[in-house]
Picture (tube, rainbow, N blue to C red):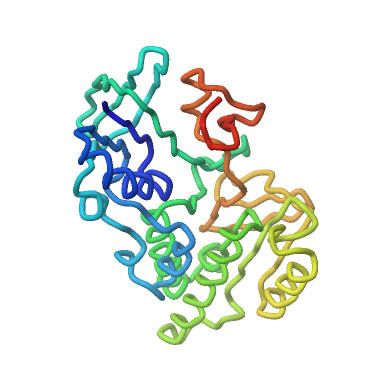
Length: 291
């Protein structure tokens, strides 16, 4: 019997860790398909972006912890559950058919991108370790550019950092990177903390909905006291040509735009005909069995 685990995140890795202890002794095969050969701890991405912890401390090499699991690095493009097979596109671009007897589906979510003009060309996401490190390098590079810029508009754009989405990812990422940039300014005698502009844009009337209204309001107050511009009930309307245009009518240049405005279910389940709800989430019973 072959058990196919789709997705090498938290669900996939820990499912394999538990299953491999039993299945190999019984002569069964455990196969994990993941688009990366590591699992990343998502809550640590802001600290990795700011440099407070090293990137290697955020990831777990799958081959090291799953020695009795076969790892296939690639992307599952389609699942034929009636036929008991999945199509996998491997790193070399080839597609292979993988038969299975039991399926464990653990792909999770992907970033939700809205049709905002200029968003796909200008914005950086914040769901992977590579995006976190890219963003850290981007912030430090903008400080370099601002230090050398003679043109006021170029200097203003380099020192403006916009985060769209007031959930955990957006708030923590901005707080960590603002702290990093503030510390880095000590090496730039031409720049002052008040030269920087950090903007948090949230479409609803509150940030961090998971923690309750009182703590959310306290967080907003602390961010504003630190000089961060928190825009509630505000949407990003355009990011074309490096100019941020908000629904409150404000417009300003910014070289850095970070998109953390929510996620949506991975589209593979709906694409493969698995039972999903109106939002695309896999429907399961009380034992987490797909209906």
